[in-house]
Image 1 (cartoon, rainbow, N blue to C red):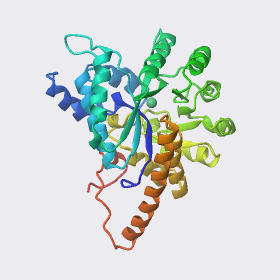
Image 2 (image 1 turned 90 degrees about the horizontal axis):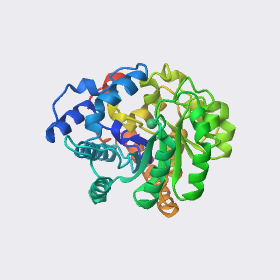
Image 3 (image 1 turned 135 degrees about the vertical axis):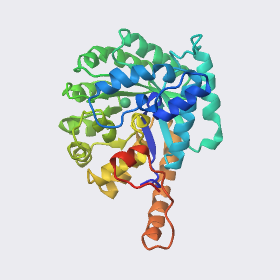
Image 4 (image 1 turned 30 degrees about the vertical axis):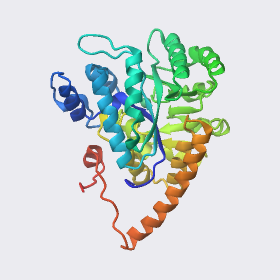
Length: 363
Ligand SMILES: [Zn+2]
């Protein structure tokens, strides 16, 4: 699974990419006070409040420091390349950063993101999406500003995502006109929304389907709307590990990924907040195969879907898809050699999450 060409990771919050030790180390490098790494991560499944009410606010000084967040971006890229992720759409905007002394201008962040991502050596193609907090009092305004910003910088920022604690679907109903207006005004931007990442919002996926979005994050409860998802070719960004770690799904076996796949819904696997629980995309595929009994053809299908659903320009997507199909064919041939002992498989880098929760031995 580590060496599998994984296609794209389309739903990954940059503020959730750092592991506890990453934040501590990167923070200390810019003179921030040290802390215990355990304060900045989640090590066992629990209620989502542990994440939204404790981890997120505690992390704020680190995730909002410009140099710390950019160092975490570099770490994500190193790890993604190692586990054969070819393309990523990372949720991060240029707003709200500050050092101990002052707020950081938007233009500075734009310049620094560009500097880092232009370096050719990463080997992972990255686009960014502006992430808007659904619970902000001025969410309509933020959506508008984010879309205008992304459209001005669409070589790098390709779309807009909406996230945060879901409390029913009233906010999505209220935002429908704003989404309709912005999607008409900015037809080249990609539109996605978190919906069904909660047990208190059973209708959220149905409501999200009434928005002009082509991707829905999580979509728990989405199996009930499989036909509409399939017909609308709306892709579900599924993250079983996140759903279990935040207590939205009680066990691997109860995760709806297999039923979505077997209803013909387009699904891709994403990491969501991998650093918070020390995971990587390999672990999502491992869980899907080992505990959710997803088949090889479904694994391949999800990697292909991840590229098909990306917000990059059509020509880039066509080239990526062709290269990915070739990479999968090559992987199958090499895997056959591993099976018969004709070649040695690469040694995987085991994540802290896999060590803790997947009974995967180191090395
Ligand atoms: Zn998310």
